[in-house]
Amino acid sequence: MADPKKLFIKTYGCQMNVYDSERMAESLGGSGYIEVSGPEEADMILLNTCHIREKAAEKVYSELGRLKEYKIANPNVKIGVAGCVAQAEGEEIMRRQPMVDLVVGPQSYHRLPELEAKAGNGVKALDTDFPEEDKFEMLKARPKAKRAPAAFLTVQEGCDKFCAFCVVPYTRGAESSRPVDRILREAEDLVKRGVREITLLGQNVNAYHGIASDADGGGTWGLARLIRRLSEVEGLERIRFTTSHPNDMEDDLIAAHGDCEKLMPYLHLPVQSGSDRILKAMNRKHTAEEYLKVLERIRAARPDIALSGDFIVGFPGETDQDFEDTMNLVREVGYASAYSFKYSARPGTPAAEKGDKMVDAAVASERLQRLQALITSQQRAFQESMVGREVSVLFERVGRVAGQMVGKSEYLHAVYITGDVQIGEIHRVRIVESATNSLGGVLVA
Ligand code: SAH
Ligand code: SF4
Ligand code: F3S
Image 1 (cartoon, rainbow, N blue to C red):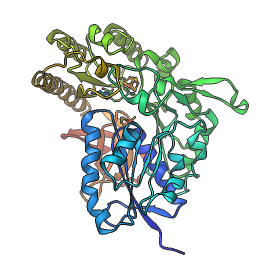
Image 2: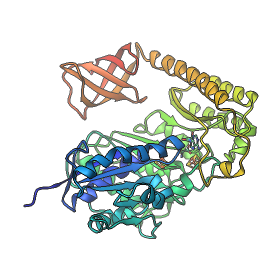
Image 3: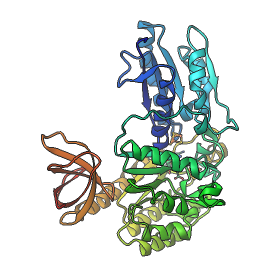
């Protein structure tokens, strides 16, 4: 048998890219590739990219610049660009970096093996179509290798919301949901391979509306029904989902947080701003009050839920008062964790095309710092509130210190213990200390 070829994938961006990278690596397995952890020995280097902010996109070009040395050392190395930058700027990538052999968008990566076979020796391959076929069905079967206990599973892709600042509707295309039975099959397969926790992924995962086969009862299912059905899968112990839009938090999904035991008490629900004026300009189609009402209902269903969010500061036209509204919303909610970003004008998006006056860069930076300080203090307070409490931990890896094991609590905190537990097991742990980014605990059961 020929020696396997070596594939190095570097992944940027969101969890969906992490999932896609796994699927791309698996599908190139059929072309004789095994995945390696660095570019040095690789026969193919693939960057799975993110276009969400300018910095993310620029990273790709500087990384390609660095990769040149591998191409010079070995002209047979194939260099590919996948993901959202590939979708948005495929041809420009080829122009700016002629050593790139192939470009493949997020909706056509099931064609990667063909593109890989075609590309190289000066031949370029580019595919940024939005094909009709279901790429997941066209992908090579996932090999039966053992998996880590926590996995991602994409159930929905694309976005029809068109927030004024966001490239996702253009890079990922229109909203589409995978059929129920395919998701169930994939989940069952993951569980057979050692997975205990599945995070359902979608750019707007709670807009999921998948077709169920007659065997499953037929009809179109929402996310709540899918979660309830998945919780019947034996051996699957935990379910999470991300990312959700406040307008799609329907009653049955909120109820599931209260009565579906396997659904973890953690919800990432971005709001972006606390100012109704800015929310309107962002085309979010909800007010701050409506967002808070949704949270209230979720907290009524699941009082211990850990909330997380995303914020953009410095959206064009944002005044000091608008920003204070955001600070006040954050104070009111009390997040377990949150991400905040400085607005980045993205080509092709309505906010960028309108050319509204940008917020002064120094002002935006100052706002970001203040918001991040507030979020960090909330995050710390939430983490510290765990001390003395009992949590359940899914153990995922060995720690750095001998005998130490590390896992995740239901609230997504990293928890370490010293004790005799195996990867993939779930145990009750009493939290005894809070470190910078993790909690220390002792085994209860
Ligand atoms: N589908 C998700 C996430 C989209 S991208 C959602 O609806 O929230 C993740 C986050 O990146 C967004 O929530 C937003 O906070 C941020 N983001 C998106 N576009 C941005 C831009 N142009 N500038 C700065 N941050 C942006
Ligand atoms: Fe982007 Fe808005 Fe869609 Fe989220 S909901 S992916 S922020 S357009
Ligand atoms: Fe980035 Fe595309 Fe995800 S732009 S955030 S990789 S959907």
